[in-house]
Picture 1 (tube, helix red, strand yellow):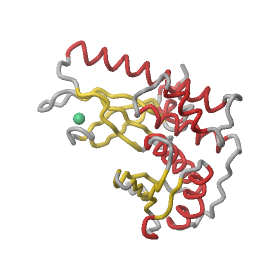
Picture 2: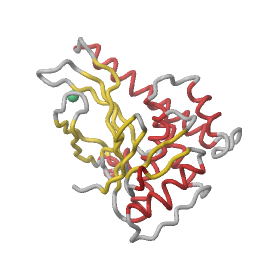
Picture 3: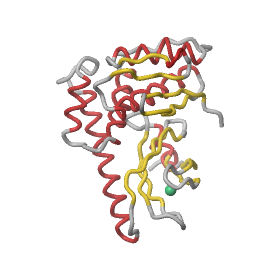
Picture 4: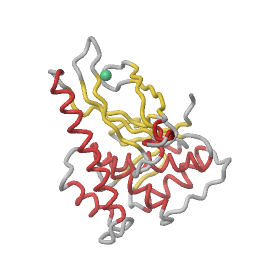
Length: 237
Ligand SMILES: [Zn+2]
């Protein structure tokens, strides 16, 4: 292992379950070179005054935690917690691999047959959470492979980004969306046959790419589930 690969980054974020700020380290190499563009990892959180929980977080190549979800609430920690964590780690690696294979598979047209890809993926992965990995992976490959080109001026405003890029990409994926009451930073998903976690994966992955392009990190906030509203905000450290 080279010295590079041993470089670790210290990250912190607020636990979505108990609210405690969790600090942890992750290999820089792992977040910079994730095959899905966004690195998804599980963490076992065992705070003193709360029952232990397994959470899954996604981290972009810049080291920003983009999402954090509860995977499972545990009641007995000891060995079980570690076992569950190892199991989940393995499952996430498998899901990443399968998502990658599907995104690059010649059997599907990734833009026209997205729904078929989702269905194939769901045969093996029933938990919604993994669909976000699939969304990340698909958008990553579609942009990387040049099937979809981002054309945004570097000085574009948030409204321009939403209108000219985010809505257009959603349309290409046949997701019916619009700006919510004309708000430049909020997108409403009006209709889609895709699960919301998949759409979230697409949007999160897309914002990582747009952020790289314009030199400003953009975060996705799930504002509401009914109606489905996603807000885009600049990352302010
Ligand atoms: Zn917690």
